[in-house]
Amino acid sequence: MRRRRGIDGALTKTSVVFQGLQPDGTAIAAIKQSRVSLRIERPFLRHEARILQLLQGHKSIPRLLGYFRGPHFEYIALELLGETLKEQIHQEDGAALLPETVARVGMQMLSALEHLHKQGVVHRDIKPSNVLLCPAEPNLVRLVDFGLCSLTDLVRPRDPRAHPSIVGSLPWCSVSVQDGKWPLTASDDLESLVYTLLFLLGGDLPWYDFPRSLRDPVALAHVTTTKKSFREVDFSATDSLLGVHLGFMLEHTTGEPDPPRSGKPASDSNFILAMDDWVPCLERNIDLTFPLHLAQACDEAIPAFIRVVSL
Image (cartoon, rainbow, N blue to C red; front, top):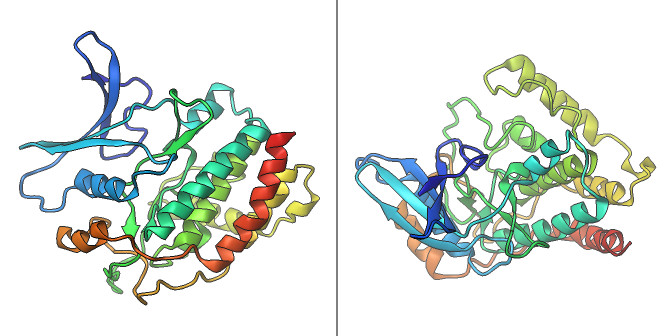
Protein backbone atom coordinates (compact mmCIF):
# COMPACT_ATOMS: atom_id res chain seq x y z
CA MET A 1 0.00 0.00 0.00
CA ARG A 2 1.06 3.58 -0.56
CA ARG A 3 -0.09 6.52 1.54
CA ARG A 4 -2.18 8.77 -0.64
CA ARG A 5 -0.81 12.32 -0.65
CA GLY A 6 -3.41 15.04 -0.17
CA ILE A 7 -6.12 12.63 0.92
CA ASP A 8 -4.86 11.35 4.28
CA GLY A 9 -7.18 12.51 7.03
CA ALA A 10 -9.43 14.38 4.58
CA LEU A 11 -12.10 11.70 4.30
CA THR A 12 -12.56 11.13 8.02
CA LYS A 13 -10.90 12.18 11.24
CA THR A 14 -10.74 8.54 12.41
CA SER A 15 -9.08 6.91 9.40
CA VAL A 16 -6.15 7.11 6.99
CA VAL A 17 -6.47 6.38 3.27
CA PHE A 18 -3.86 4.53 1.22
CA GLN A 19 -3.61 3.48 -2.39
CA GLY A 20 -3.83 -0.26 -2.97
CA LEU A 21 -1.14 -1.24 -5.50
CA GLN A 22 -0.60 -4.08 -7.92
CA PRO A 23 2.89 -5.68 -8.04
CA ASP A 24 3.82 -3.33 -10.89
CA GLY A 25 2.93 -0.30 -8.77
CA THR A 26 -0.37 0.49 -10.47
CA ALA A 27 -2.93 1.91 -8.04
CA ILE A 28 -6.18 -0.06 -8.20
CA ALA A 29 -8.10 0.75 -5.01
CA ALA A 30 -8.43 3.09 -2.05
CA ILE A 31 -7.73 1.35 1.26
CA LYS A 32 -9.19 3.04 4.32
CA GLN A 33 -7.51 2.04 7.59
CA SER A 34 -8.67 2.63 11.16
CA ARG A 35 -7.15 1.45 14.43
CA VAL A 36 -9.51 -0.75 16.45
CA SER A 37 -9.16 -2.99 19.49
CA LEU A 38 -10.53 -6.53 19.51
CA ARG A 39 -12.55 -5.45 22.53
CA ILE A 40 -14.65 -3.15 20.31
CA GLU A 41 -17.80 -5.01 19.30
CA ARG A 42 -19.08 -2.43 16.80
CA PRO A 43 -16.04 -1.04 14.95
CA PHE A 44 -16.35 2.18 13.00
CA LEU A 45 -15.35 0.96 9.53
CA ARG A 46 -17.57 -2.13 9.71
CA HIS A 47 -20.48 0.23 10.28
CA GLU A 48 -19.44 2.18 7.18
CA ALA A 49 -18.93 -1.00 5.14
CA ARG A 50 -22.43 -2.24 5.94
CA ILE A 51 -23.94 1.12 5.02
CA LEU A 52 -22.07 0.98 1.72
CA GLN A 53 -23.25 -2.59 1.18
CA LEU A 54 -26.82 -1.40 1.59
CA LEU A 55 -26.34 1.47 -0.89
CA GLN A 56 -24.47 -0.32 -3.69
CA GLY A 57 -25.76 0.12 -7.23
CA HIS A 58 -26.14 3.90 -7.46
CA LYS A 59 -23.77 5.82 -9.76
CA SER A 60 -22.86 8.34 -7.03
CA ILE A 61 -21.98 5.70 -4.41
CA PRO A 62 -18.41 4.32 -4.49
CA ARG A 63 -18.03 0.62 -5.20
CA LEU A 64 -17.29 -1.42 -2.09
CA LEU A 65 -14.54 -3.95 -2.81
CA GLY A 66 -14.13 -5.53 0.61
CA TYR A 67 -13.77 -5.27 4.38
CA PHE A 68 -11.19 -6.87 6.69
CA ARG A 69 -10.60 -6.71 10.43
CA GLY A 70 -7.29 -7.66 11.98
CA PRO A 71 -6.00 -7.68 15.58
CA HIS A 72 -5.23 -3.95 15.67
CA PHE A 73 -6.69 -2.39 12.51
CA GLU A 74 -9.71 -2.67 10.25
CA TYR A 75 -9.81 -1.87 6.54
CA ILE A 76 -12.29 -0.99 3.79
CA ALA A 77 -11.32 -1.35 0.13
CA LEU A 78 -13.14 1.04 -2.22
CA GLU A 79 -12.85 2.06 -5.84
CA LEU A 80 -10.03 4.55 -6.36
CA LEU A 81 -11.33 8.10 -6.72
CA GLY A 82 -9.81 11.50 -7.38
CA GLU A 83 -9.65 14.82 -5.56
CA THR A 84 -12.40 16.34 -3.47
CA LEU A 85 -14.48 19.30 -4.58
CA LYS A 86 -13.07 21.25 -1.65
CA GLU A 87 -9.59 20.74 -3.09
CA GLN A 88 -10.84 22.00 -6.44
CA ILE A 89 -11.87 25.29 -4.84
CA HIS A 90 -8.63 25.68 -2.86
CA GLN A 91 -6.46 24.99 -5.90
CA GLU A 92 -8.03 28.00 -7.58
CA ASP A 93 -7.48 30.24 -4.52
CA GLY A 94 -11.16 30.28 -3.67
CA ALA A 95 -12.37 30.73 -7.23
CA ALA A 96 -15.86 29.36 -7.78
CA LEU A 97 -16.65 26.49 -10.10
CA LEU A 98 -18.56 27.11 -13.30
CA PRO A 99 -22.36 27.18 -12.79
CA GLU A 100 -22.82 24.26 -15.19
CA THR A 101 -20.33 22.22 -13.15
CA VAL A 102 -22.13 23.03 -9.90
CA ALA A 103 -25.43 22.15 -11.56
CA ARG A 104 -24.12 18.73 -12.62
CA VAL A 105 -22.83 18.09 -9.11
CA GLY A 106 -26.19 19.20 -7.70
CA MET A 107 -28.20 16.82 -9.87
CA GLN A 108 -25.98 13.88 -8.98
CA MET A 109 -26.01 14.63 -5.26
CA LEU A 110 -29.79 15.12 -5.19
CA SER A 111 -30.12 11.71 -6.82
CA ALA A 112 -27.67 10.23 -4.30
CA LEU A 113 -29.55 11.69 -1.32
CA GLU A 114 -32.86 10.44 -2.65
CA HIS A 115 -31.28 6.97 -2.95
CA LEU A 116 -29.99 7.16 0.63
CA HIS A 117 -33.27 8.32 2.07
CA LYS A 118 -35.30 5.70 0.20
CA GLN A 119 -33.04 3.11 1.83
CA GLY A 120 -33.67 4.72 5.21
CA VAL A 121 -30.16 6.19 5.51
CA VAL A 122 -29.24 9.69 6.69
CA HIS A 123 -25.66 10.67 5.76
CA ARG A 124 -25.20 13.40 8.41
CA ASP A 125 -21.93 14.81 6.99
CA ILE A 126 -22.56 16.25 3.52
CA LYS A 127 -19.75 18.68 2.61
CA PRO A 128 -17.38 19.49 -0.30
CA SER A 129 -14.58 17.30 1.06
CA ASN A 130 -16.94 14.30 0.99
CA VAL A 131 -17.70 14.64 -2.73
CA LEU A 132 -14.92 13.20 -4.90
CA LEU A 133 -14.14 13.28 -8.59
CA CYS A 134 -14.28 10.03 -10.53
CA PRO A 135 -11.23 9.71 -12.83
CA ALA A 136 -12.73 6.79 -14.75
CA GLU A 137 -15.89 8.81 -15.50
CA PRO A 138 -14.95 12.52 -15.57
CA ASN A 139 -18.55 13.75 -15.63
CA LEU A 140 -19.43 11.93 -12.40
CA VAL A 141 -18.77 12.53 -8.72
CA ARG A 142 -19.09 10.15 -5.78
CA LEU A 143 -20.38 10.78 -2.25
CA VAL A 144 -18.06 9.28 0.38
CA ASP A 145 -17.50 8.93 4.13
CA PHE A 146 -20.51 7.06 5.49
CA GLY A 147 -19.12 6.59 8.99
CA LEU A 148 -21.64 8.95 10.62
CA CYS A 149 -24.66 7.55 8.79
CA SER A 150 -27.68 6.35 10.71
CA LEU A 151 -30.73 4.30 9.78
CA THR A 152 -34.13 5.90 10.19
CA ASP A 153 -35.70 2.52 10.97
CA LEU A 154 -33.70 1.99 14.16
CA VAL A 155 -34.38 3.47 17.58
CA ARG A 156 -31.47 4.72 19.68
CA PRO A 157 -32.75 7.81 21.50
CA ARG A 158 -30.36 10.41 22.84
CA ASP A 159 -29.92 10.55 26.60
CA PRO A 160 -31.93 13.64 27.65
CA ARG A 161 -29.31 14.34 30.33
CA ALA A 162 -26.49 14.46 27.80
CA HIS A 163 -25.23 17.81 26.54
CA PRO A 164 -26.36 18.29 22.90
CA SER A 165 -23.51 17.66 20.49
CA ILE A 166 -23.16 18.56 16.83
CA VAL A 167 -23.12 15.65 14.40
CA GLY A 168 -21.10 16.32 11.26
CA SER A 169 -19.02 19.41 10.47
CA LEU A 170 -19.80 22.87 11.85
CA PRO A 171 -19.58 24.86 8.57
CA TRP A 172 -21.92 22.48 6.76
CA CYS A 173 -24.40 21.11 9.31
CA SER A 174 -27.97 22.39 9.40
CA VAL A 175 -29.16 25.15 11.70
CA SER A 176 -31.43 22.61 13.41
CA VAL A 177 -28.42 20.46 14.29
CA GLN A 178 -26.68 23.46 15.86
CA ASP A 179 -29.85 24.15 17.83
CA GLY A 180 -29.66 20.64 19.32
CA LYS A 181 -32.20 18.90 17.08
CA TRP A 182 -32.35 15.12 17.38
CA PRO A 183 -32.62 12.88 15.44
CA LEU A 184 -31.22 14.08 12.11
CA THR A 185 -33.36 13.59 9.03
CA ALA A 186 -33.40 13.96 5.25
CA SER A 187 -34.03 17.68 5.71
CA ASP A 188 -30.67 18.13 7.45
CA ASP A 189 -28.83 16.34 4.63
CA LEU A 190 -30.50 18.55 2.05
CA GLU A 191 -29.61 21.75 3.92
CA SER A 192 -25.96 20.63 4.08
CA LEU A 193 -26.06 19.93 0.34
CA VAL A 194 -27.38 23.43 -0.38
CA TYR A 195 -24.53 24.98 1.64
CA THR A 196 -22.09 22.77 -0.27
CA LEU A 197 -23.43 23.83 -3.68
CA LEU A 198 -23.51 27.51 -2.72
CA PHE A 199 -19.88 27.22 -1.60
CA LEU A 200 -18.94 25.67 -4.94
CA LEU A 201 -20.90 28.34 -6.79
CA GLY A 202 -19.41 31.31 -4.91
CA GLY A 203 -16.10 29.96 -3.60
CA ASP A 204 -17.00 30.94 -0.04
CA LEU A 205 -19.72 31.16 2.61
CA PRO A 206 -20.19 34.03 5.12
CA TRP A 207 -19.16 31.83 8.08
CA TYR A 208 -16.61 29.60 6.34
CA ASP A 209 -13.38 31.32 7.45
CA PHE A 210 -14.41 31.80 11.07
CA PRO A 211 -12.84 29.50 13.71
CA ARG A 212 -14.75 26.20 13.71
CA SER A 213 -14.01 24.73 17.09
CA LEU A 214 -17.06 23.01 18.52
CA ARG A 215 -15.64 23.69 21.98
CA ASP A 216 -15.51 27.45 21.43
CA PRO A 217 -18.91 28.90 22.37
CA VAL A 218 -18.09 32.19 20.61
CA ALA A 219 -17.31 30.41 17.33
CA LEU A 220 -20.37 28.22 17.64
CA ALA A 221 -22.64 31.19 18.36
CA HIS A 222 -21.18 33.18 15.46
CA VAL A 223 -21.67 30.39 12.92
CA THR A 224 -25.20 29.71 14.16
CA THR A 225 -26.21 33.39 14.03
CA THR A 226 -24.65 33.90 10.60
CA LYS A 227 -26.37 30.82 9.17
CA LYS A 228 -29.75 31.94 10.49
CA SER A 229 -29.27 35.40 8.98
CA PHE A 230 -28.16 33.78 5.72
CA ARG A 231 -31.39 31.81 5.57
CA GLU A 232 -33.32 35.10 5.60
CA VAL A 233 -31.58 36.34 2.44
CA ASP A 234 -33.85 36.92 -0.56
CA PHE A 235 -32.16 34.74 -3.16
CA SER A 236 -34.62 35.84 -5.83
CA ALA A 237 -32.62 39.08 -6.07
CA THR A 238 -29.41 37.31 -7.09
CA ASP A 239 -28.26 37.38 -10.71
CA SER A 240 -27.52 33.64 -10.64
CA LEU A 241 -30.35 31.41 -11.83
CA LEU A 242 -28.79 28.50 -9.99
CA GLY A 243 -28.43 30.59 -6.84
CA VAL A 244 -32.13 31.48 -6.96
CA HIS A 245 -33.15 27.84 -7.02
CA LEU A 246 -30.66 26.84 -4.34
CA GLY A 247 -32.25 29.53 -2.18
CA PHE A 248 -35.64 27.99 -2.91
CA MET A 249 -34.36 24.59 -1.78
CA LEU A 250 -32.86 26.10 1.38
CA GLU A 251 -36.21 27.69 2.21
CA HIS A 252 -37.91 24.31 1.92
CA THR A 253 -35.60 22.60 4.37
CA THR A 254 -37.22 24.51 7.24
CA GLY A 255 -40.39 22.42 7.34
CA GLU A 256 -40.80 19.28 9.40
CA PRO A 257 -40.10 16.19 7.25
CA ASP A 258 -42.56 13.36 6.95
CA PRO A 259 -42.03 10.89 9.83
CA PRO A 260 -40.73 7.39 9.09
CA ARG A 261 -43.55 4.96 8.36
CA SER A 262 -42.52 2.87 11.33
CA GLY A 263 -43.02 5.90 13.56
CA LYS A 264 -39.52 5.51 14.93
CA PRO A 265 -36.92 8.25 15.41
CA ALA A 266 -34.69 8.93 12.43
CA SER A 267 -31.31 8.06 13.91
CA ASP A 268 -29.31 6.72 16.82
CA SER A 269 -27.33 8.46 19.52
CA ASN A 270 -24.06 6.55 19.29
CA PHE A 271 -23.44 6.65 15.51
CA ILE A 272 -22.42 2.98 15.61
CA LEU A 273 -25.46 0.72 15.42
CA ALA A 274 -25.74 -2.69 17.05
CA MET A 275 -24.83 -5.36 14.51
CA ASP A 276 -27.82 -7.44 15.53
CA ASP A 277 -30.03 -4.61 14.30
CA TRP A 278 -28.36 -4.60 10.90
CA VAL A 279 -29.49 -8.01 9.69
CA PRO A 280 -33.13 -7.16 8.88
CA CYS A 281 -32.09 -3.79 7.44
CA LEU A 282 -29.61 -5.37 5.05
CA GLU A 283 -31.99 -8.12 3.96
CA ARG A 284 -34.81 -5.87 2.82
CA ASN A 285 -35.27 -2.64 0.96
CA ILE A 286 -36.54 -0.23 3.62
CA ASP A 287 -39.67 1.38 2.22
CA LEU A 288 -39.24 5.05 3.08
CA THR A 289 -40.24 7.72 0.59
CA PHE A 290 -38.30 10.94 0.11
CA PRO A 291 -40.05 13.43 2.46
CA LEU A 292 -42.82 15.20 0.57
CA HIS A 293 -41.70 18.79 1.13
CA LEU A 294 -38.14 17.90 0.08
CA ALA A 295 -39.35 16.08 -3.02
CA GLN A 296 -41.35 19.15 -4.03
CA ALA A 297 -38.30 21.38 -3.58
CA CYS A 298 -36.18 19.03 -5.69
CA ASP A 299 -38.85 18.77 -8.39
CA GLU A 300 -38.74 22.55 -8.71
CA ALA A 301 -34.95 22.84 -8.59
CA ILE A 302 -33.85 20.07 -10.96
CA PRO A 303 -35.34 21.70 -14.11
CA ALA A 304 -33.35 24.83 -13.22
CA PHE A 305 -30.18 22.75 -12.90
CA ILE A 306 -30.87 21.23 -16.31
CA ARG A 307 -31.33 24.69 -17.86
CA VAL A 308 -28.00 25.85 -16.42
CA VAL A 309 -26.20 22.76 -17.69
CA SER A 310 -27.61 23.24 -21.18
CA LEU A 311 -26.46 26.88 -21.42
